[in-house]
Length: 178
Image (cartoon, rainbow, N blue to C red; front, side, top):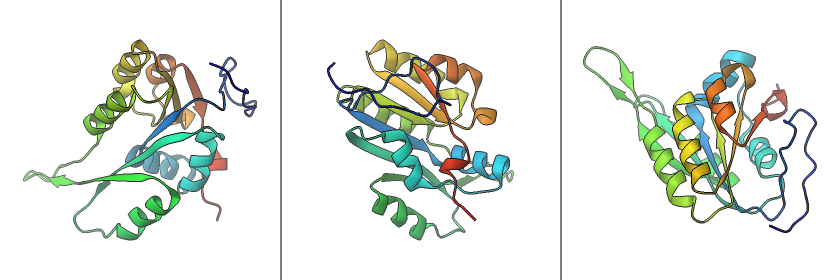
């Protein structure tokens, strides 16, 4: 593959060569990242900065956010905001069980989308710390796709970091100020 190498911040792992001609798909596990940012920094993720940080000038084929909404919360303005930034948004309702527990995740949907798009891109950026995606990362790499994982170091599963071609730690630079 021809193209210029992108100069990334020194906080990124050595050997993480990114090229401007890599066709990129970005998959954001919104709930995972929301709670990580809240628990670690008591702040919210800046989705505009995140998109810039992950894309680094590469052509983004698709950028998809996976959102779980509670039935009692109106998140329409948040979803509209993400769409205005250029993300496609997949929405699923939180399911409340009779015993009081709740379920809502996009793991299977994200995995299916990533596998489907792997034929159209060179690189997949997974923005999540969820170790459940380790098998997906191995499958994507076996299909010849470069896989980058972006997450907060203290909340990203070590197995997911090791499975990826490169892990890029997120920090305060992708959080909302104030």
